[in-house]
Length: 199
Length: 233
Image (cartoon, rainbow over all chains, first blue to last red; front, side, top):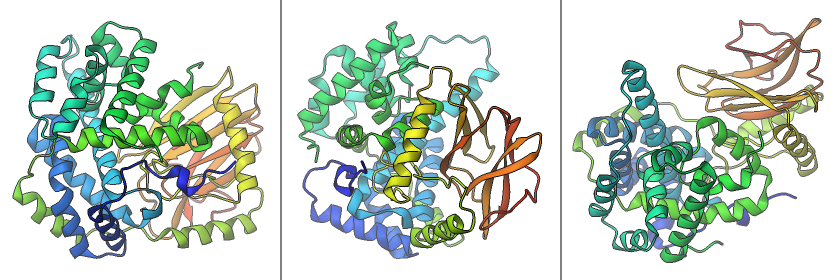
């Protein structure tokens, strides 16, 4: 059984003109078009930098990561296939993964330096507050508010703080199976609340 | 290793897996059509979360990037690479050429997932799955300082091992990475890849170690350079 292009396609709302434009811009970047690259940066730069900044916190480190993301976009744009997904999802997925990898890498280095500094993880009231207050997108905020507290904590710690589910389990003093279930229930509820359609 | 891979779907979409589990899950995802449908909705949801925290970057970033891309080579289009691999399969028929290049595969939706012909791919995927899900599977990994990881999953009961390479630095123009299984009689080529790939090796019982070297495009009959990675079997 081979996966068809349709099944591989990222689920999205019906493609807007803006999404189509970004897709064709990214295809042009794959052919070495520097103007198309600048146009993509102007459109997605704030999304990429903002996401990196949210996960990493340190603005100058976030800037480095955002730069890496756009350089990688430049290098590998030829592999982008608009029939199988949209450019914005591709870029933001890449940005999030880079940011998470960076924050884990930096954390591991810090832990090596401070071997006996057993910090107990973040203060959850603070996490909750910083995540929800600065969310610009009303719908996302409303949908996050619609989660149970445990689902929201699990999603927040993983997505916005770069925790692995095992780290989330330690931080929340829960077992890993429970955390995975919370994440799943949370993301299903978010998906339905945001009206993301599985195509 | 008894983790139900299906339960990793939400953690994967949230990037809440460590590198080893992420790699294992992507290998599973590539073969699981049901998962691909569901993960697409999860990933799109995660993208919405990501897009909700945008923040204007410092103006200097734009200038730096526009300067830097002027000095940064781009990957070549995929069509060329596919043609090369077809040629390679003809010339070295016993190679298990990297079947489905993951490239963050479905996860980073939009990347082309390269495929060989369906039957060949299916057989290989079944074989890879059986190793990854074996009760006695063991893994070891080598991470490159410049980024990228080569991970080997081996199972004595299946007498097989799976090699997964992810995000290795480019081997250089006109070069590929070549994987060798080394036993008492010397190295045997297992296939080549550029920066990402997976391949299965059968008959690992007598093998001593697996090595990765940089070779000219098309691969070499015997290693011509010192290994960039060696993993004990």
